[in-house]
Image 1 (cartoon, helix red, strand yellow):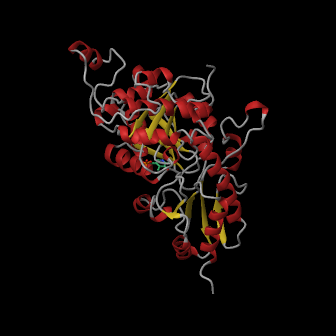
Image 2 (cartoon, rainbow, N blue to C red; image 1 turned 135 degrees about the horizontal axis):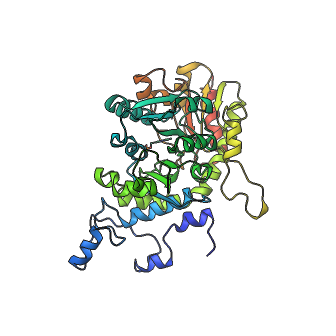
Image 3 (tube, helix red, strand yellow; image 1 turned 90 degrees about the vertical axis):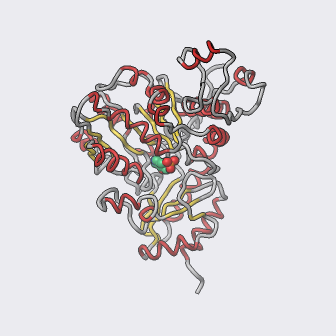
Length: 434
Ligand SMILES: *Cc1c(COP(=O)(O)O)cnc(C)c1O
């Protein structure tokens, strides 16, 4: 078979006819809801425990169902990437953020490490860097105030910098970074560029193809769109250039995590959750396509209303990241057979209704179809006010960190019909009939 397209990889993953034969022909990937494996002999057990055969042994070291998900995630994120790619899946997106960064901060390879990160990061990521690394472990945390300024990134890097980190688009203000330009800086410094690509998903952007080294995904979001399981993934290209670290870490970073930190600390995904996520991830492209084209229409509609002060969406020309979004956000394989490639800008947008914070609470309260909930990327549209929910910890800890206006509503567009979504937003903005 010539190299399969994105949707084929999403549907099939690594579970092909041959693989199914060793699972009694099961058409669906079986859920191995078990803690450990029985061996036919002592010798076989020793060989598996010594990693001499590709086996799993104990579900904290690995599990066949979890491995099917890892292989699928690696195939999607590695699509059209000119390198070998592998993945490690984790309990949550935050666990993936922690796994992707912790090993790079080892003081065994040098004292006083620092990191350089975009100031537009998810609330809990900001807390991991500021509190867990900065305050508790003395890591220097250098925030880039304007993530679009390559000059500012360059200025903050020195010989003790261990990695560059950015979210693109960021949650909640949907700001992008210039991944290819940051990749040049990272290569020069021989440190990895880590991108949290949760809001783009591999259906729209594959950061590894744009030059990034490591990708973090919260599978809780659009990958697991039915909203049944949390999960995360660290996906990395092989043969990283890591100035300060052992060669086995550089050779296969995700494999190194699976065999080391992930196994030792036990942040492994439950096989049941892996199984539900496998069911969802197959339709990622179609779903993200529909959600994103509806999100653009919603953003345009809101921007056209006189009682909406501001709309944040990379698909709008008014957004600061619009030029980069137009350059980098494409629906995967929309250009096959000579067709013109299609821009898609994701399913997340934010808006500020006129009238301030009180008015924003009232608009949120009047939503009748859209759910008031702190998740995103789901087939069900959801809305929240990040300043008082997902980003509250950050605002409490440091009011200067990450500008999230208190009257900004974050909207994640799902798969309901566009007309119904717009009608719900209109009635919420119009307010009670006089
Ligand atoms: C939600 C989210 C995370 C954290 O994922 P969890 O699965 O909730 O732990 C990380 N990054 C971004 C951009 C997110 O939206």
